[in-house]
Length: 379
Figure 1 (cartoon, rainbow, N blue to C red):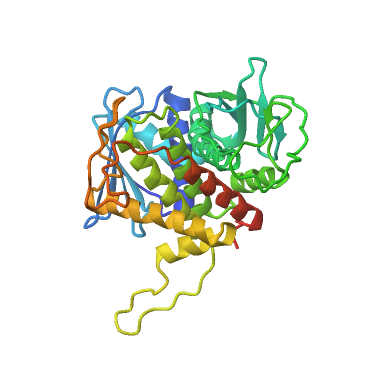
Figure 2 (cartoon, rainbow, N blue to C red):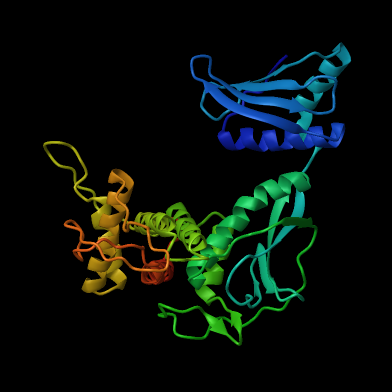
């Protein structure tokens, strides 16, 4: 069965699909997927997979497009009676009138090694300590049903966690998502009153992690889609690096190398928030202003020259690890040191373990906080 829709934008198509899935859940009690997406460019078709909405047959579902990401028509294949086909046809044409968006609050208990968060109230979020001493994050979304709400909120909550990570110099992860209809009633706590220029600590006041005013504003702006995506993506790299090293030991050298890659990549993403003049080589056309140079210039805004060199060393190590497979250690320390010479290392010896890059973590989060203070709003 083919159904012409002729949408005009990707936003319109994705809104319609969310409404359609919610319509099937409402009318048939189920919309489950064997999700097997692929795109066939020659026929301009995107195949979603096989959908089960409690009919006698699963539905093979695909769309055709003229512009990538924009629905021209739907294609539904399966063994159905005429009445079932007529019903499906009607639902597909009227999905966005059968269901409508309403307000949902999605909450999660935060996983972190830090003390609980002091309460914070934003336009679209709440952050507070519950009666069990756990940090809870609530985010508001407008969605068609609880499944749709959790789908929308999950990415928003993860992004808030990533911002909280660089703001607090530690990992912050979401856990189970719970749906409700209203925010928890809490009182706003005072903003962090300490020196904003801290570098190797956590923003703790009265035993609670406390956000600065600018950090609360940035979370608000991010939830409204007004923060540069590179800043949020870089914060995700930082959060994942800190999470990898949550249970650090000298025997986890390979994981440490991976975390270093993420920390340096976080700086690369953060550096992309800066406006620079790009000059191209007249002979080869390549951009002269390298990513490495951009990163080191960013570091130089916030740290002295000897620490720019320190970060550059990690940048070089990351490149060797990614492109040549060279690890920062032999990763064979299990309680006793056996010194061995190396003709290629800076120290002249093989390093049996990779030392936890705690200073790198501290400097990266410091640079993110400084960048946030200077401004990361979309222009």
